[in-house]
Image (cartoon, rainbow, N blue to C red; front, side, top):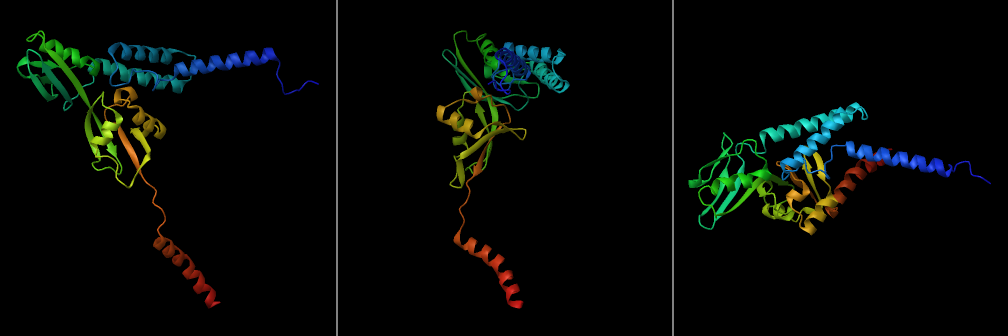
Length: 266
């Protein structure tokens, strides 16, 4: 007896192949958030350029819906603007350490002209420079004077921790800082915090889930590895408080009191 609900093998293979192809196309079309490094703060110019080109190809293809194509267009425009203007804004901070045959160790502030002044080594323009390019730009300027100097450059991100921690608010952290470093810099969670409920948020949208945050802390993953961007924040929820006996009695009396009075007046 043949089951009428069972498709023929050839039809099933064709359907599964079609579905697999469709899913692959759809996944390729989406502006990748986790797989692509195009939007990551540590992305190279080549990675940002490649991601912008991919999104532009999606936006130009009639194979995709208008909504997806519009989303791809916005994403590509954002990346092209990043490539043109760079990552740095006035007020950003960069740690620069020079050692060897020269010495310098300061946290520099980017001025209104998007320039930092590396002591006696002179000014370095960061206009149109990505974070991934800052080290080479500063290193090149320093070695014009001190050719064999060792130069360490660490651009800083503004990252916040909100919730029941000792020192909530924004802090400056390098891209190679671990997520638990950020939590420690905020003074750590208070007793009222629930360390099992944490998430990363950007523009009121969750970017890294609770389970991913806990895994990142356990495995020592860095902000760059997690794709954390300037302005993102870590949210820690407050622990659910157990019912206090006094509160329970008060709630019961508030409910039972009027009911008892109404019964007595009948």
